[in-house]
Length: 176
Image (cartoon, rainbow, N blue to C red; front, side, top):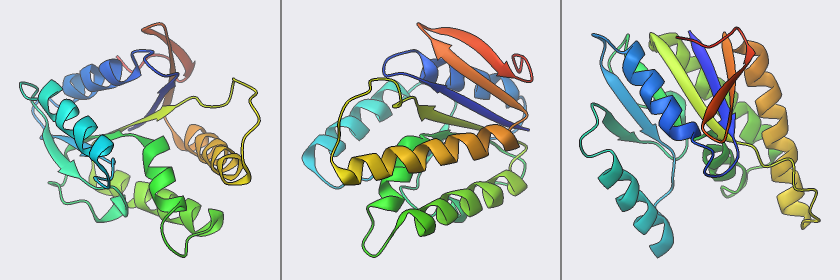
């Protein structure tokens, strides 16, 4: 089963997705596939904070900032991908990448991951509503993420938007 969870910054999407993944994992292994790239002091601080927040959670963390289809986890695990928006940026802004190669890397990687997982929960950010004016590279990223959201929503069994920590079913009802 593929579940797509999205919402704005600090909406509660990660908390919801973590709880959902944990409830699906009985008795399967529970994998937290972390996509943040440890490339600068700020990202290192954020990764350390996220690890501390999950210290007592039942997840085994797999760091995979790119190439998620290559992630190492047991067949039949429940996998939480945190998050699609970060993974997309990592793939798009890799040396030599363009929107097409980034989209292909993300979608093929998710397909491989879903083929091995019992359940996959993908978290992403809603970055589409502010109407701001951005440089071309940022607009390219937003368009690509929008394309990936649409594709993932079509493939998903369930799509859930989180608004102020309230899960709103968009497709397939609430998973549990």
